[in-house]
Length: 167
Image (tube, rainbow, N blue to C red; front, side, top):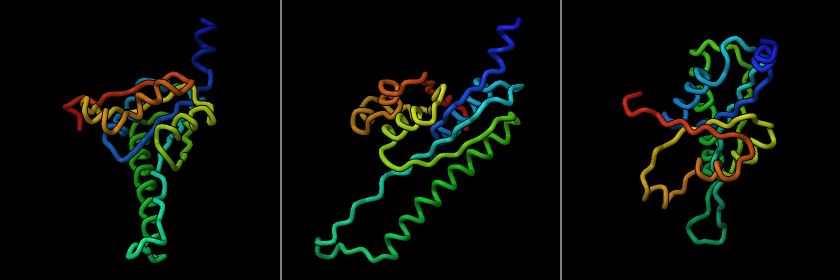
């Protein structure tokens, strides 16, 4: 009985990679319902959103000189998108009524690399990701972030598939 009590009170850092997709929001909801204990206040939920890297602009190509306001506008769009994703995630974890500490992190770069690095640097005990459930050809062309993370992340990884009849 004592060992079980100690395990229940142990602090866990659960990182959930979130993006604009319904799949990632479903994975967050699943995590809150199935992984994080309802009666433990020692859980920390780390929400990670990865913005794509800023595009590189060539200033020597004729006709492709971007004005400063266009670049600023694109950067603002990236910030707005990150805020939107985090707001949607906040609605999901508030609806679950699960008393967890929440840390919000935003990274920039290639999602598969940023997620693996962040999981290690932020000392995640477990990483949770949604699956887009791409078919074979899309996976070959686009690659799979979850496949890459499964091979490179050092903590356990849970890939959550959204049932077809949800949302």
